[in-house]
Figure 1 (cartoon, rainbow, N blue to C red):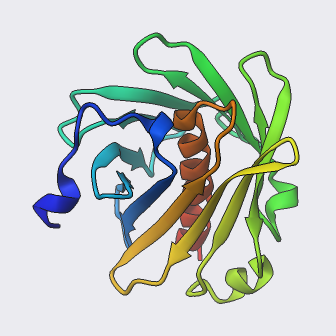
Figure 2: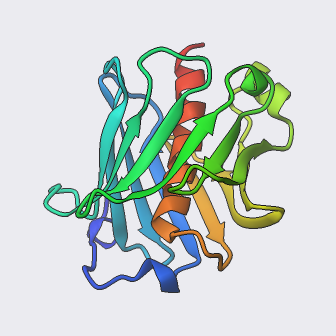
Length: 199
């Protein structure tokens, strides 16, 4: 990976950003590594998602050296059909919101319900397009959308690449914390990766 892609700038404000790229390798053994870049190639998030933990918990860092934690994401259950994840600010431990995946409803199309810190449902994230075909032919590229109420606040689209998984994320202004929006996008992509690995 080039220096231009791996550099990160401490002063980047997510409030001023609207276009991101998320990358991960095609295959993983013990963990999945996600990197989130701004539109001009600045690394803003680095995630090592463990594959073998009974209860999912991982940190989101601002750098690959993992010296600047941004978010802590933790599953509330060990075993459940409808998994729920809490997203906390790593510095203050303040809850930014939670995301619940509806297991049975996600057999054909992934869907996540989004809740604010008080537990009030404020939106959802949903797989778009030919979701059933992608379960039969996983090489087809995926799409997801994130909604706050009925307003679409983010769209995640996979770009076809041979040796890496690459996704663009385009966001719209909203009252949702942009870090939380990206966390929801990452959880959607993690669910997709888990389904592909299970094949």
